[in-house]
Length: 193
Image (cartoon, rainbow, N blue to C red; front, side):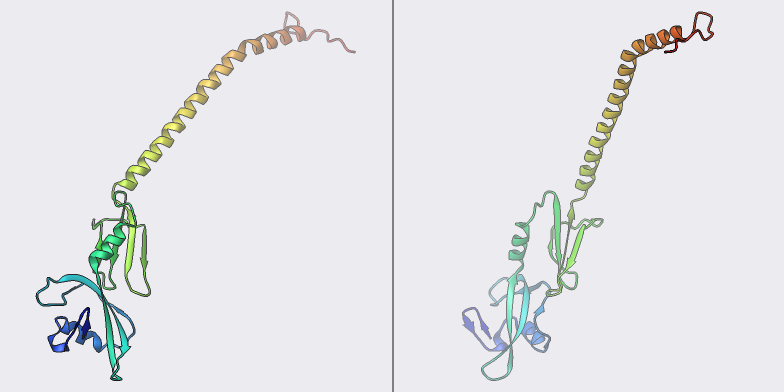
């Protein structure tokens, strides 16, 4: 086993069980779930995701190449990509195990859910609970208030225009009435050209 700056036999390798379990698999690259890994017995285990590739070895037999990715670096990268005060992002392994679980509310409503064909990971994202409702509520309240304001303004303007123009129209109707009809209400003489 070649690991970092060390070379040792498989029997003395701390991650021997994992190496032996994936060495039997021959299906191309394998992405594992989150697992604990330590290179030396004196180290504390840390959560990693391993990517396993088959590689030929000098002896002619097949070997494996394992890349261990620290889960904390994945979490730091994902955290830097979005605004966690307004939205949430969750990242799950192929088997549904959380890799990055920003928002685990049971009734969360993910607006987007995508699964990678390569890794099998699923990422879901959406608005944090209450934010979407508050935003929609505030937005609809503004439009409702604006609609009421327009309606009331239109009503007041209609009444004002009607009252301002009512007297001249009434006087015109009275003059027409007196010129067409004589005083007893019967039609008078209309001069013809």
